[in-house]
Amino acid sequence: MLRIAVVLVGCAACVVGSAVGQPAGLAFYDDLSLLPGLYPNVQSYYVSSYDRTGGNDDGFRGTYSQLYVDNNGERVIFDANGPGCVYNLWFTGNGMRLRWGKIRFYFDDDKAPRFECEAEELFSGQRPPFVRPLVADAFISSGGFSCAAPLPFAKRLKITTEKTVGFYNAYYQLYQDASLKSWTPEQDYSRLIDLFERCGSDPKPRSAKTSVVRKTISLAAASRGKSTEEELLSLDHEGTIQYLRINPLYPPDAYSLNHVHLRISYDRQETPSVDVPIGPFFGSGLGEADVRSLFVGMSSSGTYYCYLPMPFRKAIRMALQNRSYQSGGQFQVEIGYTDTCLKVPPPGRLGYFGAKYHNAWPIVEREDYVLFEGQGPGAIIGQVMTVEPVHPDRKRWWEGDMRVTLDGEPKPRFHGTGHEDEYQGGWSTFWLMNPYSLPLFGEPKTQGLVDVFGQVNGSTTAYRFWPGKIPYAKSIRISTEHGNQNDTPANYSSLAYYYFLP
Image (cartoon, rainbow, N blue to C red; front, side):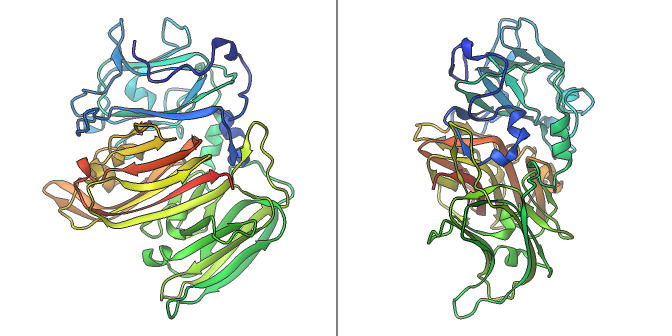
C-alpha cells in the first residue's frame, strides 16, 4: 500500500485533547494573534495530480489522479498517518462539473467511510457541515471546487473517489507529540464560518489595551534619484502591531501602488525587514482591486487593511516611501498596537513578521521564477503573484507548476499543476474572465483580456494563504514554472508573507 506521508508518532499520542505546540485544525483559527509562533512539531505537505514525468499530463488523462486503487476498487487520492489535518481540498472538472461520483472519508481504523456524498454535493454548500463559505463551487471559485473546512485525524485519514478525478490537490499538516481528536460529521464549524464571513475586520481576539495612532501624511514626488519618505510610527519599547490600515486620499493607479513602499524596521535594525510596494502587500499587483481576505485586503472605495500581528522586543519604525517621480498624494493611516511583545507558549519561538517582494520583467530564462527564498527557522503565511503577458499571443504561462522545496530536500515537497489550480480556480479562460476574492485565496483582478484563437489571455493577480503556515527549519524555496517546461516569457512579480527568527 502506497502512503504519502510517514508516521510521525505512535498511536499513544493520539488521544483527545489539544495539540502540544502548533495549534492544529480549528484550534489554529481560535487565536490568530499566535501566528508569529514557530513550532518544531509541525510539517506541511501537498499532494496533487502533477505529471511525475515532468510533462503536462497533470490531470487531463487521469494518469496521476490517484495514489493507488484499494481492494474495494476505490481511487485513493489521499492517505496519511497522523496526527494531522487536511486544511484544503481542491478539484476541477470538465464543463464546470465533477462527474466522478462519490467522495469518501475514512478516519483512523474505520472500515466504512465516516462521511460520503456525491462530489458536487460536497461543494454545493447544501450538505452540512460543509456549508458556505467553507466550500466554494466552480461559479464562486472560478472553475475550482474548494473546501477549506479543516479535517483533523488522530491516526489516519484516507480519502477515496468512486471514479478517476482528473485534476486535484490537497494541503495538509502532520504533527509530532500531538493529541488530536479525529473529525466527525457533527463537527461544529460555526466559529470559523463567522470568522470567514467577517473578512475585513480583525480576525484576532480583541485586545483591551490597544493604543491607536491616526495621522494623515503627504508623500512628495521623488527627485534627483532620491526617494521621499514619511514616518508612520516610531516606538522605542517592546510591543506588537495589531493592525495597519491606510486609505489613499487620491485615485492611485497601478504604477503608484507599485512604487510606494511600506518599510518596517524592528529593534533599530539598519535594513528594514519589510520593504515592499503597498499594492501587492494589500493583495493586488495590478492596482486597486476588491480584496477581502482573512488577513489583508483593499478596495477602491475604502481602507486597505493588514491584520497580521507584528511583535517586536525593543523598537519599531514604520514608514511609507515614494520611489516614483509622481506625487504619491495623501494617505490616511491608522495603526493599532499593544505595549507588550507577544509571548508564545513553549516549545514555540517568537517569530518576527517579514514580507519580501520580487519581480522579473520579463523572465525569459528556461528556469523557474522564484517567488521566495528564505533561511530558517521560519514559516510562510501566504503569497501574492502577478503575471502580465509580454504579448497577447504569448499565452499558456498558466501551465507552469508551483514547487516548494524545504530544508534542502532533493525534491519539492509541494508540486502543483498550474497557476489556476494553485489559487483554487480552474480552466484558464473561465478563470481569467471571472475574478474572485475569498478568505484564503483569490484572483481579485484581471485586465487586458484578449481572445487568442479561442483562448483568453491577459494579466492577473492572485493570492493564497496557508493555514498553519509552511514551516522550515533551514531553508525554503517557492518557485513556479512560466509555461510548461518554462517555455513562455512573461512579466512576473510576487510578494511573500512570513515569520522569521531575528
